[in-house]
Length: 361
Image (tube, rainbow, N blue to C red):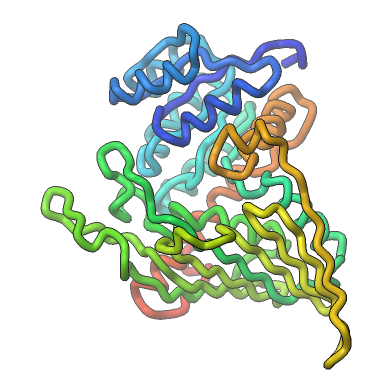
């Protein structure tokens, strides 16, 4: 596709994340939303209003795929639907930006990754955290060796509880894959990216201790983890840790990522957008900490809830569609992030270390 040609976008699933994609497609040159698919009419109405122009509406992904109205499609439907939504999109040879998680089971994620491996169009797993400007700069500095040889990586997300979704599907692990898949596949993807190696074993201690205690849906209590500590050992000897709390709404920073090497510690703070460099100085010597701010354009910040990342992800995806850039997050990346999340879910449930080869990886 030429750079001057308009990418016609379809969006499958018209909930909150779809609205963020709509806002960021509107900021992208030569891109327009032409079709929406969702079985819920009220959701379609909201999404169509956000598009602001005439847009075709369909009840399902198959009808959208068969319409011939789209060149590319965002899959933003509930996690458990991805495995069924994707085949007609593959058949229609559309470029696909599939929201995380890729799927909710290892078998389904592997099936999607296998289909994508031989696909002659762009398939991209949406992992927004990679594209936050401060995080992208942080990763570049770690890879450039600013902290020295990386030995330890820690990620903290202290945030608000899961939001209400249509049909309350995200209250149950059978639909979402569980919190460690639904929410944390982002962070497991970041771990692999930063560490540059594959995970060997995972240990997670987690539970649902505060949120959703009084909620019932058809008489059933939600079963999703709301706090956890997860430790991951990587094949190259690096250790990584994820500290998740979903009842820490008032935290100053929602995300903090810390890389410690043999020469220094490097932090990135979101939403502050700061990178903090703390070199080793020896016992009782004066510290020489420095802080630099990484600016994110205001328009990108205002177009979503992921610190501008969705905008930059769309720019990179469009470049790949036009043959001007690589696929940055593959279906295989999506599969491996799901596998790490499922390993963490199993570890928390069974109170044991889970080896990644138990999942065939």
